[in-house]
Length: 228
Length: 50
View 1 (tube, one colour):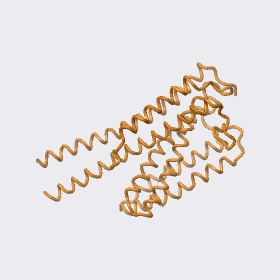
View 2 (cartoon, each protein chain N blue to C red; view 1 turned 180 degrees about the vertical axis):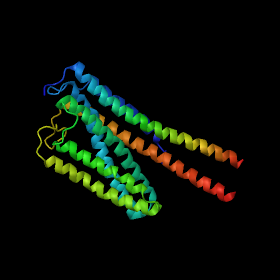
View 3 (spheres, each protein chain N blue to C red; view 1 turned 45 degrees about the vertical axis):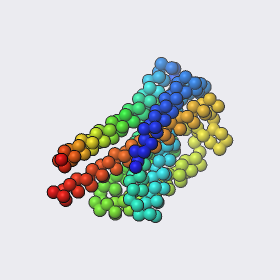
View 4 (cartoon, each protein chain N blue to C red; view 1 turned 90 degrees about the horizontal axis):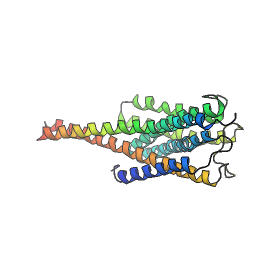
């Protein structure tokens, strides 16, 4: 079910990400202020946007689970959160690398964007112990969904709060006034976001395929045991 | 802080992209190993069935 269209999707992801990297290094001009270090933004910011979007998507899937009672929605929500956590880890590490190059420090505690992302990341790290501490599958799915919805609602609230906060240190890539990116940088950035979004969907489908195969194997084993 | 010169900034940029690619490769390798294990177990079940 989940493996349908996975191969063309993986190819589309590979092509888009390769195109994005080519644009980053051969097309987008050097930033006048930050120089070459600004190239980190083309991987760091799309990863952050897609990770946060994945957390929200996990919440929406959890709503679908609670509304329908269909546990496949819980599995989709879990995998969306899992992939987002991995991307989130990438965001924190690439952000720290950029901060060291731009600010001279790996981490700055008084920067709201950094700290708020860390809070979101740590919040979702709690999802795993919560989920796997419950043995009953129905309760596990239900409780995990409630967490995913609550935490998913926190993500946009957190984003708005950070946007409202006054900050002169963390650069704004996109804003209501059109951001500070010129046309060729903006195009590169959009292709990078498209590549990252495709990567998210590919990894999500890949993990769901593995999970579904694992569950089918378990069923087959149980059937074989019952027959013997 | 002034912009870093290209030779110094290059290692940070390379580091960031290596982290990204490394994360994705490790993740895909783990899932691929999982799928391969499932495939082996299915083959074993099929053998037992015969």
